[in-house]
Image 1 (cartoon, rainbow, N blue to C red):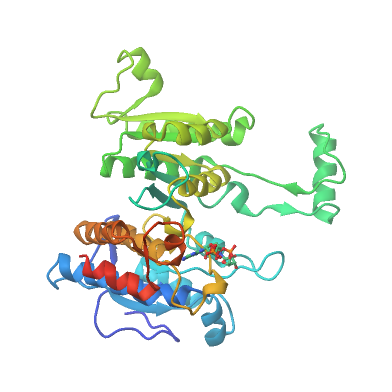
Image 2: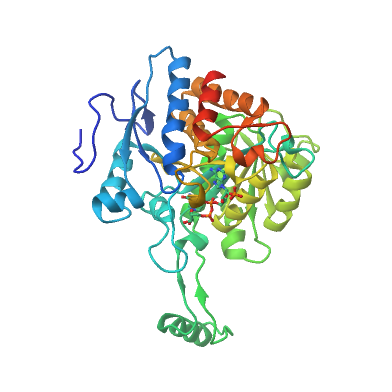
Length: 414
Ligand code: NAP
């Protein structure tokens, strides 16, 4: 096993291997975790207990996650004098699957978001967010149960590529003068400049992943989200390349909306995945008014960002939304909320986002029985109105539990 200077490698457990392009999961995989800043310490250990209990129960003790702590954020700074040590990145690459709590990002200045950096350096090109209602959670719409979608958001380019320069800077002045002179543009001299690249490479690998997911989980549609009516060669191209990948690589398994109309008289063949597309502003009203018509959404970075939060809010908020950042094999699962500093160390925060990210991780390992057990028990606990402070204040007759009590209640419900 590879050596890491500051990591306490466990005596037991094995690393996950990639063999012939597939993950080979041992019965005791070593899974690195980043505790996270703020409420990270409140939610991490107790969430692990929930996942451990489910794995034990689902496989009669035959399988077990061997946790390995790795460091980022405040804890990393104390140990390495840097916020994102290269050893942390190496460990995630080496052990293939990892999970993290929230990390602090300073606003304006300081260092760049650790979350964004992790996604980029590990080439985790798909940000995956399932959005599904948990019965009993207060939600702002009449039928939150109609929403059951999974968003695949491109994670490496578009506005995330970080190509921007401030108004008046040497770079923006140079770019403006170059563009106005050579391309006859009329950009105002007092503009800040941002560049939004969208490539065929990044688009195709994202859409491919979304279609593969739809096939594996029997999802009926994959919708390409774009603003191609305005930005033809970035957003519009995202749509075109998305259809290209669908038709070239999955021809016998998919059907487009156009084909449904022309060939199948408006009725989608049951066994095929429908590939369609929607303009970004339209999809926001579609998911609100007709959520049942949508299942998997594939979007460039910025559209996907907005959609992930808006749809999560529709089913009761970000506090419960899980997420994963996945590349070709390496996967980093994460709570989608931040560090909620005012609740740090108070054993109050809701651990559901991290626990449900753990559910996604168990599914990724192929441990679907354990994943289902966690999800069902968490749902049952909320149905019993045993919840943390954030939900208790919105639910009539609910019992307020601490973070650790909530996790114990989930384990009891298994
Ligand atoms: P935040 O940490 O998500 O907290 C905002 C509010 O959301 C909290 O005050 C709380 O609301 C509620 N909340 C968040 N997580 C909760 C939980 N687990 N249980 C119950 N309530 C929860 O957002 P922020 O205050 O904007 O950001 C704080 C720091 O986190 C910043 O440094 C930011 O950059 C970072 N951040 C990190 C990530 C990440 O690591 N993925 C994501 C977002 C933000 P009430 O006070 O109303 O109860």
